[in-house]
Image (cartoon, rainbow, N blue to C red; front, top):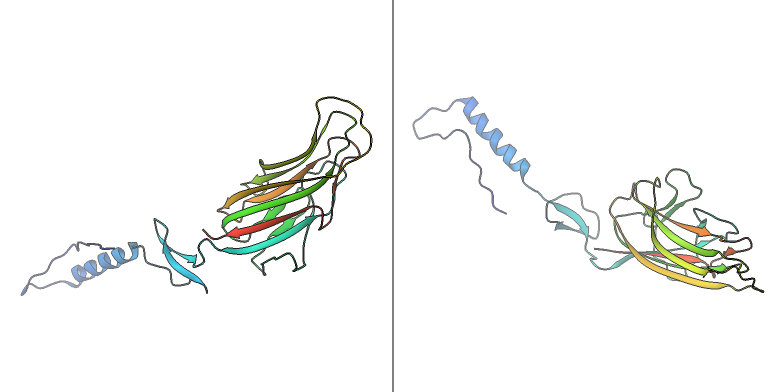
Length: 226
């Protein structure tokens, strides 16, 4: 990157220069240096300096690599639930890859900042499997849908949908079934302070439910370095 800076005062041999003019030239040079897009000097281990199109930034050297895999399971729901409760799967047999500061954080309820919070910016792949029991004796819809917030859980938009039952006719049926339904989607997380993810369960009809447990209803969150 080349830069040309013009100083306000030009001196010639034999011509006296005042201190004010010399200082003015130095100030101009300092301002020019400060305006340059200089690389950072505070990158962490396994980071490199990369030009992002506007400035130099610290970036992971593992571009395209998986740098986090976190798994959570639902506790089960028997009624309409805006924010399904999840517990982190602490086992290691399912191939998780996480650490303090490099894992999802879940806030229950529907207060400010509820849902899942992401540890870092980047591309995330979310895979969810839910075991649902629809009660089918009347017209209703039983589903789980994923919702995403850009404003710290104030408003939400749908980003994924799994439906176990959707009927248009109120025809009585007998017995019960459990259906495992899945969804997969990606999210581009650019602001970890405000962006959230939650899962909503719609019962549809009394006796429909979301079956909880680490073997029945879970989500896996994977971060892929850009």
